[in-house]
Length: 276
Image 1 (cartoon, rainbow, N blue to C red):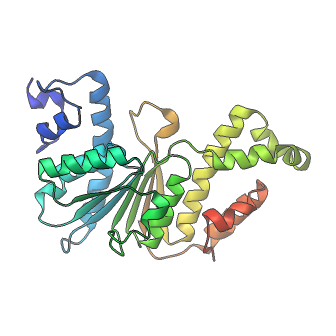
Image 2: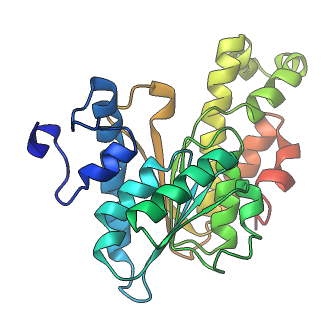
Image 3: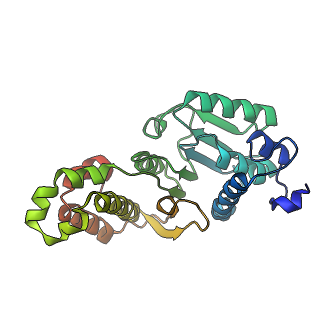
């Protein structure tokens, strides 16, 4: 099968795709792998534009939280970093077997400017191996509060850009569930989360709304869009944050107002510290 028929991007290594088991050893691809590759390419298009905005020297740094098998990190390195003689990708993952596998693959492919850390997103901010600042922070389906930890990491590291695709989110839904009886007595708006399915869906929506407000309050311009063609409608929201340094007091005020309205004030010091 010709590479063109696989719809590969120019310069894409078929050897890498075989190592990632996206292609078979014969260079063939099944429908599931084709879909996965198209999804990663779609996300790559967003990230590539951000990387091109960064200064050529000393080279971009990128931290990928919840890296898993590091499909995104390897594709980014192969299509962007490999063409340059500087820059570094750090994969952050809690499962040691995936960290070992990814590091071995990077060594085998000669991807010398890739490193993998067996730490949580929360622990990564204090990891000595990471530089004091990181240009781009990504979190692709980092589960539940790991996305919040990735945001906190980005703030600590003065990230220029954050690229977030949230996954399952249980923390706020749990808070809504715990205070449901009191909320139903206090406001008719509690009907929005009276039923368990609505509690989960509203909790997910609120989580991302609060994340966006927190980023705006912390000096970022935020864009929310949809990743077209992703198979799970609840996991295709893309949050792009660009650092401007202009903290929005109004965003902080609205964030606090939303927390109060939904009885979530206890989350402010844990998830949204430093509001002005």
